[in-house]
Image (cartoon, rainbow over all chains, first blue to last red; front, top):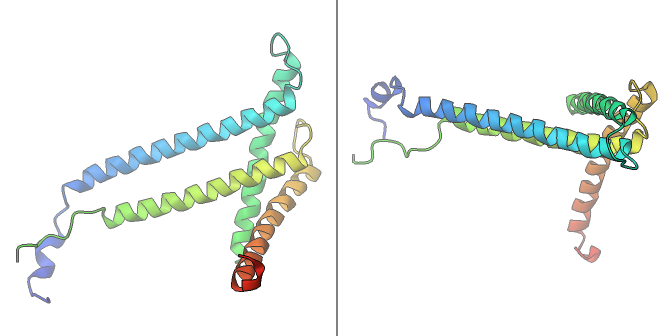
Length: 93
Length: 87
């Protein structure tokens, strides 16, 4: 199947789909990032509600709000610690 | 010579993109699972900063969870080869 003409004819042309593909990739990426952030904060909410709101009263107290803020920040930190640990381990393999 | 064009499918760039995103998602899921498990093990009440004790607990927990995963997988593979194991 080695025809002399095969190389030159098609290689240069950008297919009309390339533009469309880029758009799709960007859209998919945005959706995935949003999904990740959403899932992350859902986990944070579950974890922190459990830790901070042990006996729910008539409203979210100042103390509970402070605890939630602290908990959010700590969970983010914990995620960073885990990320570092995992990345460090993968480097060893 | 009727079928000149290659079958219309995802471009190489698209395939690379999908692969990259799949890998990223896998790593993200693993990190989320590890954080979930180790948070429960290491943090009883979140303070105004992550203490060095909590931090090293989380680090050890994450690493040992990975070790445990590998250990169990290895043992499972071993068992799979042994017909008397019941699997």
